[in-house]
Amino acid sequence: MTIAETIIFFRKSRNLTVRELADAINVSPTAIALSEKGHRTPSKEMAKRLSDYFKIPVSAFLNDGYEPHNPQYTTIDNDLMIDIVDAVTEFLHENNLDISPDQRRELIKHFYGQNCHDVNRIREILSGMLALNSHAFGKGK
Image (cartoon, rainbow, N blue to C red; front, side):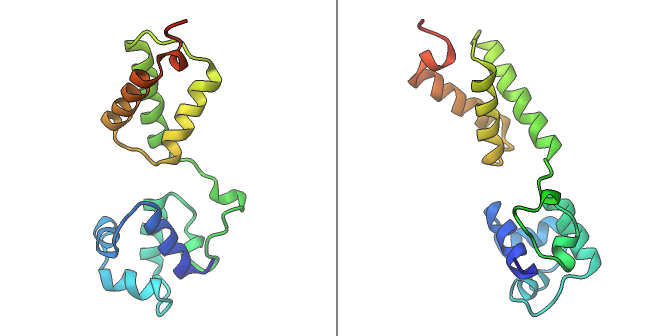
């Protein structure tokens, strides 16, 4: 991907408008728009802010663009992962649910893949899943 495509890809992956991304990294919407159109290469400072925000190497916004299959781009957002693991673990414990390690791993991967930061939303979804299919959570055996 080009740098412009990389910015668009990551902005859209978080469902952000140009203005929302600009506000999040403290740059002007014009700077984002010009970079997305390929009319301007992000400054080093803007590239660093994008890198910090999206948790990928700064080189993706300076010269390389993003390559999804490149191992350097498989970094994990540790704070997000910890929040998800805690939310799933607490929900299972509070509801006295017994699921296999593989099932637990799949739940965590699902929420991580959805980039779900809202712990209350995770609990809400798990409650709905429990109501729909208690057998999947080790109940009703």
